[in-house]
Each structure stands twice: as structure tokens, then as C-alpha cells.
Image (tube, rainbow, N blue to C red; front, side, top):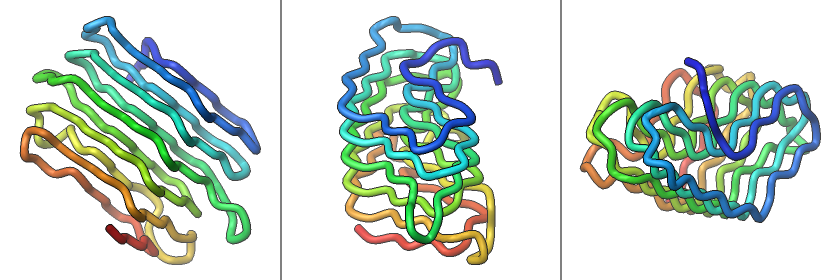
Length: 166
């Protein structure tokens, strides 16, 4: 998948802090968009207190997407206190927060609303990838996840050691 636009894009980084950003996509685009995308960090990353509004009506759109982030038992990657809203769309897919192949993650106090008609590619939070408790856990605590189309709001696959709490 080729992503053609987004607000923040970081790869091969360490000790990254993405905080207090107001990001508004008013384009009504039909291209793919990743609001905040972080990939391949050798240490924990903090993504917090960001407001993301994605108005793209087609393509595959992500509010926050992270993959291959490797926190540790003493320093978890944290995604917290973010607000993500996505406009009604019927083509492509929407992911409010997507965590792929990451270890030692905290996901706290986020509010995510998506509004998409595709049930197989639209979810407020999707956690997938590295399975088994050997690889560290992901904590998902005190979040609000909403899918306005009545589809799933939360999905996880092949992921061990995950703790969920409302």
C-alpha cells in the first residue's frame, strides 16, 4: 500500500515524542492517509495529546498507525490522550489506531470515532502481529472506541499477553 499523504511520518527512530498536535485533513481525498505513522523504532515512542480529524472519503485511512515498535519492560511505548475522528466513507477502510508487530505498548485514555461501511477493513482499534506472551504485553485501558456503522470497534489477532480494561 502506498501512502500518499499524512501529518507525521517517522521511521527508524528512537525516543520519539509526538505531542500536542492538531491535525486536520479537510481534503475529501480519495487517496490513502496516515495521520501519525511511526515504524521501526528501537526504543519506546510516546504519541500523546494529539487531535486528528481525517475527512478523506476513500482509500485506506489511519488516525495513528505504528508497526515494529519495540518498547521494553522498563519503558513501554505509549499512545495516550489522543482524539481521533474520521468522516463517513464507503470505499477503502478506516483504522483509528492500528498497532502491528509491536511489543510493550500502553494504550490509555484515547477517544476514537470511525464511520465507515466496510466491515472487514474498518475498526476503531486493531492490534495484530507478534503473538505469545514471550514478546511483552500491550495494555489497553480506559479508552472510548466507536464505530458509527455498528461494526466492530476493537479487533486483535495473533497477539498474546494483552490486557484489556474499560
